[in-house]
Each structure stands twice: as C-alpha cells, then as structure tokens.
Length: 208
Image (cartoon, rainbow, N blue to C red; front, top):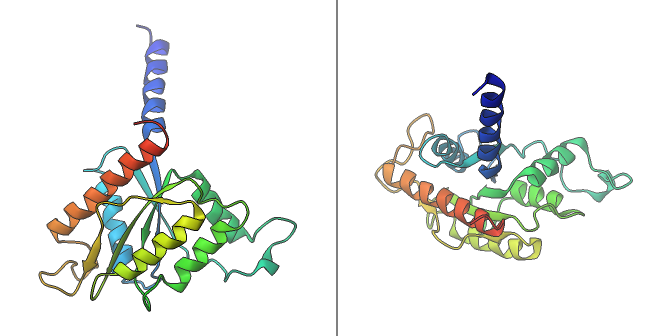
C-alpha cells in the first residue's frame, strides 16, 4: 500500500468518525460565576472527552445576548451576538440545558436566549434536547417542567428518561471548593443523561 492510499484511508476513517459524532450545544440558565448548573455542564464536557464516546459538547455563554427587542432586527438580520448564537444552535445536533429554578420557572437569561433563537426561522425546531438542574428543594424540577412546555411550541424533542434533579445542599457534598462535581453517583446520573441524549439524537436523525 503506497503512502497516498494510506493517507486517503486515514482521511476516510476520520470523516466517518466525524460524521457519527453528535454535536451538542450546552446552555446554562445561571450567569453566576460559581453556578452549580454551569458546573454540571463542565462535568458533562469532561465526561464527553472520556467515558461517553461519540458526543462533543460546546458550552455557549448567553450573558452577552441583548434583551429581546425586535427593534434590533434590521432587514431580517439580527445583532451580531444574536446571529452568532443562532448559528451555533443551527450547527448542533442537540441541546443540553442546565436550568436552575427561579420562581417556579426558568431564569430570565435562559428564556431570553430561547426567545432569540425562536425568531424566524426557529432554529430549535426538530432538535433533541435534555435538561439537568441543580439547586435546593426539588433541585429545579419546576423549571424543567416549564421548559418542557416551552419546548412543545418550539418543536424541541426532550428525552423523557432519565430525569436529573440535584439538591446540592443535601450531604454528601456534591461539589468541591473549586465548583467541580465530585460525587460519583451524580456523575453516573449525568453520564446516563448524555448517553440517553446521544441515543435519542441518533434515532431522530435516522441513524439508529
């Protein structure tokens, strides 16, 4: 086998691997620097680099998005920050939301991001999605159920099981002082979410 043939086979192998890779964008509804919800995304990214194969997660910072205002739309175009955000959603196969609960609902920043990406054309439509949340009480359950309602109108397809709610204040400690997830049971639950999202995404894309 000559070097040219070997190089072509290697490139074909890389292309096959790339085409089967599930691209996930991850959004956190909390803008707090030490957010537990954002920490869950960081842990998910680490899992995607090792234990969960075939999935690539990109965290998207939504803090720079302006408040939704259709006066900012000019001739069918959006502000540069909004357009860049929308294009990341377009390029993704699925979405991971980390959604804390504020007043029985999703946070303002997350709703703002969702609304911008729903402007015509709705770039959420047809994508698989999953939700994780962390907090006190029921661990953000009410925000998740409200987000699922929003997803119905947006044509987002959420995985139903497993569900992931985390009460971060119940012992044993879930995060260390640097905000890293250290609870192995919680890591395994997060891993199951990612595996379920991967499987469901492939099913929606007709590859499984």
